[in-house]
Length: 128
Image (cartoon, rainbow, N blue to C red; front, side, top):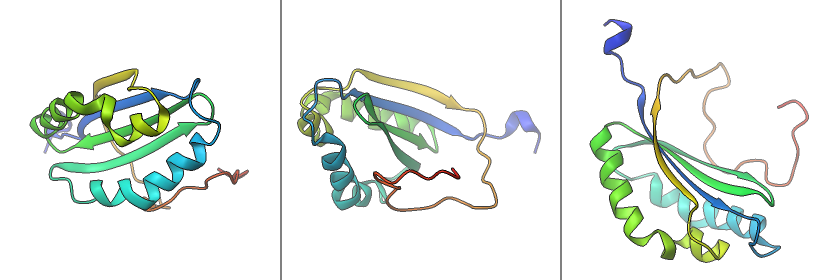
């Protein structure tokens, strides 16, 4: 297989501003993601992986990588119809500011591998 024929994936970013969100939003989002959202996406057809990213007080983001453009586009179309009423939007108090496709050029998995499950929460990993 030549490098040009390999595909890494089809990405989608959904980002909310946390500027006007409730003061408890970081903890609320962590609880929602770990307690509810992760299970929903573990079985989404066509999804290779999803990460939830956050900069407290700034933004919260779902980053998706799908196996095919069709899988991504179908998910995006359905999500956009209900984005303002999605659980994340309800918790945050506003609809996403950004919903955009992107190309995943490559994925490199290092020796530590992918970790599944909750992140560090409010702990700060000085080595990371």
